[in-house]
Amino acid sequence: MLASYWDGGYVTLDVTDPTKATYLGDTDFAALDPEALESGSEVAPEGNAHQAEFTLDNKYVVGADEDFGPYALTDGTELTASQGSNTTRLEEGRSITGDSVFAGGACPGDPAVPAGDPNAVDVAVVERGVCTFSEKVASVTAAGGYDAVLVFNRTGADACDQTLGMSVEGDVPVFGVAPRGQGFAIFGQAYDDAACMAGTGPAQLPVALGIKGDRLTFSSYFDGWGYAHLYRNESGKLTELDTYAVPEAHDPAHASGSGDLSIHEVAVSEKRADLLYFSYYAAGLRVAKIVDDEIVEVGRYIDEGGNNFWGAQVFESGGKEYVAASDRDHGLYIFEYTGGM
Image (tube, rainbow, N blue to C red; front, top):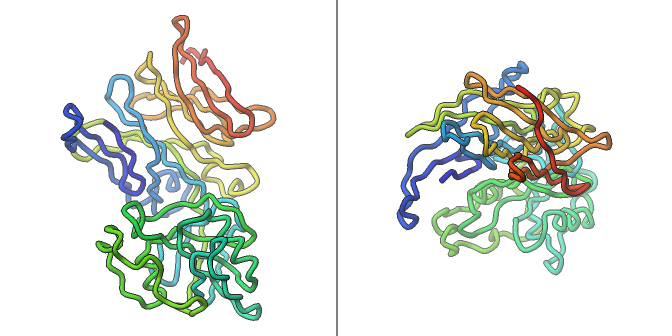
């Protein structure tokens, strides 16, 4: 079995006995992002191990590192957060510094979010849960006076001190999802991760709505979009052999205005051990080969009207291999790779 564990990397397991899965190997992210390094930037990788497959011969693991945020954040405190997807972007070199204000759950039906100070920079700090991120941001916007929103995680076995990217819409910069312990620390509250995971910790941060916490500073820098990893399939730590990204993904000029330039997933050929298909959102469908332990692009398709490719799956019909690619705007495409390479 091959599991994609986001910041934990990719993990291989022996499931000969499904009731007793045992560890075989896993991956680590490099200290510096290898794709960014090729473009001359020394930044930490975000670690977005989203999806992966074994090649036909099981010699390699190919991983899709999905990243919708071409700008990463640094903060004046120890916060782990990325920028929300469809909100006002904090572009490279810009920063926001302001007082944190606890806004509760900020869901429809919750106590109203207290208004921010229109004459100061205020950051609404909101708990994840119950309603959508976009609804929370709408509640903060309706309250008025806020310049940014920070979301921190809720209680529960699949939450607490885990981080999470956000698909969210809004007219102010939105950051998150930060670990729950960091949300508590902003307001000087003790946090017990074991109790949180067990569901016995506080259901909501135990402070009053509108109370101010630490002064927060968010600064932005360009770190590129998501890309593919190539690992040798072996026991213990898997060796990373290569990475692949479309050229535009690590060009700051395409950080906005060119659509999402992240990989979403890989589909490996069921006929050839060296052939790969990548669904790459706005960068289209990409076809690559593994040549001498490197990923080499050998084909592509981008519709004249643009694409937003999400899924990719190979199948066979009449002795030929095809790949189905789902476009989030236009529907399903069927392709046949006819290149000779």
